[in-house]
Length: 188
Image (cartoon, rainbow, N blue to C red; front, side):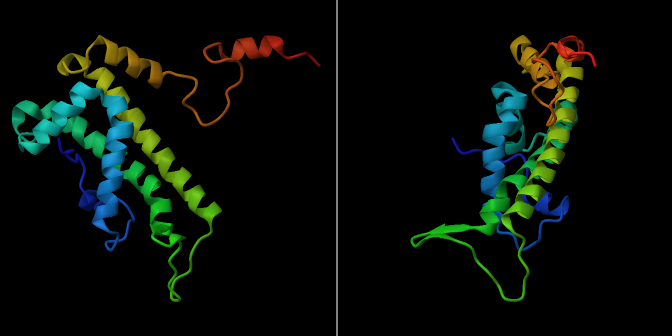
């Protein structure tokens, strides 16, 4: 079965600083990867397939599917920023028969790999924010979304409230909190 894209390359261009000349094939590949590898982990397979069905049959904008349209709108922002983060290296480097190449144009200044990775991290943080908002919305609306069975909701809650999610170390073992860390620290 062909994957139905929940976000278009034009949506990404319109909602970000991606240039209009970025190849739609690269953006579509990024969208497909993000949907299959990241978004499906948030939505679950049932909700993901139902959304794709509503989009492919063009029923998503009908009034009875309003809640699914809201899920799609929130998911599209996550997809957009995650795709930008994922394609940064693809845009800097090309693989062809002669190996890995970096294309250059004498009229442009290029950033180094460290700057590229810093910008990639920036867009990943934006994507993480929209993933968090999407997860909160799904949990708040779980009664209206039968595709989120009990198992998927437990998974959403565990990811949403996990100590493993933040990009900073909060101290102590996962799930033990600050008080455990404080007790093991010697007093001065």
